[in-house]
Length: 635
Image (tube, rainbow, N blue to C red; front, top):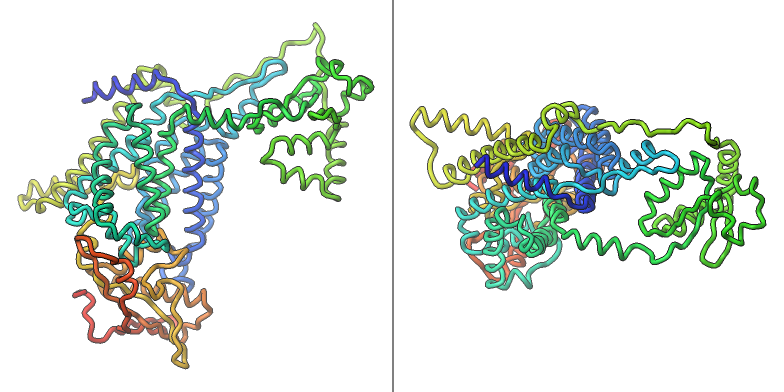
């Protein structure tokens, strides 16, 4: 097996491809991270405080979230990309493993994010659409010899995230689905959107009420998950798999309230977009002719750096730069300007022959580039224009010029510095392509072994057999379980048994909460509404806490009380309710979660009546749950 993987890796390393798709994926993946950090910060008291606002978590957690936000921003912009990738990965491990996110607020996609975040440390995702490329151009360019960073990567940079983060996940998930009754009935995509806790606000009933259609989707998902890993790297299957996978995950985003998982999976399909498509998009963005011709002082280091910066961000090719010393006298509009005055400003000509100078040149550059038009408007505003003009004049009049004759020393660019983390390790252990292939192949073998351990342990033995009674086998079982904990935490390799029959079977009840004031008037908390749906912005991680941990088919009283305390304390502070003397009503609705299709089940479950089953009483910092005559464990 190792030799086969080694040969495949070696072949992948020898095939260069454009880095555009990898750069776009890096940006999209970073945006998913950014929204999740913002979500965590918004709900920081609910998620991290033992008792929201009453027993607070360390403020360092909030500080770390802000630092993580900055790191994710650097990753999106491609600024010190590899270092940002290292810190991003460490933050995922830190927050997932050492905060309530580990068990109480599992987002359902943390392992996917951990896995891909780890891979981004080693992927050259900074080679397209990054500030790192700009940094390198500015650092290593010299007059007359602009530096062009590499814009290609090996095709393996695309295959690794697809194979590890998606392929192994799908294969493991497919095996779990075979053990699930409603998935075997073809109802895998039908049942969750009919359960109020999981459905989105979009009414998908026209599709949910088509039994044959839902069966086709359900079986297609299982088939897709088994076919993805062996087929995704074949060119002829790439587009069909991309369209199918993107459709399935777009369906998750639209039909369920776990949009972070849907988006996290969906952005990986950017790695499957054919390179030709990116080239065609690029060609359509480019203008046939530049809008503006800008003349700059070729002997001015600042002017040369300005040219590099503008060209980097001019994605439409709207600006054509020409050196004043070489081209100025070829244009009649510049003939009347003396040479000494030409060198005091930046000049520009538009398509109508209008001449601009100084700050007006910069404003027209921003206009021509298109997406920077708002900046041009701001700079042209009264007050801003005058201030910007004074700043420009001061810089332009005090800039240095470098005029060289035959006696000048030749300027050379500084030697290229490898900014990758563990660069010394690369130089020592992966100095040649063969060594690189060997290291990657060994890593892939390790990942396969860890994934097989997880899949066999939970996907086969746990679901299809019983835990071993023999002491020796029990030790092996425990060892396997321990290995899974580490692979789960650091590589995101974990059982992907999401929304299986053992979760939905018997899940025939849901809970909601209302506040009852001193006059007896009730107000529903803006958490679970009268239909039973969890309201935005609780979707994602908070939804997982309530629907997968607090309220389940086999609730425990201690666990339920823990989250009743969290929700009521959190919303009491948000709504200005005094907990010195506050009562919250616990409401229960019975719903149906059949293993086979029923007509119009979504509407039936939403229309089911509620009944009051108990009260959450707050008296100062003490909470008591009173549910008379109801055995929670029996639910």
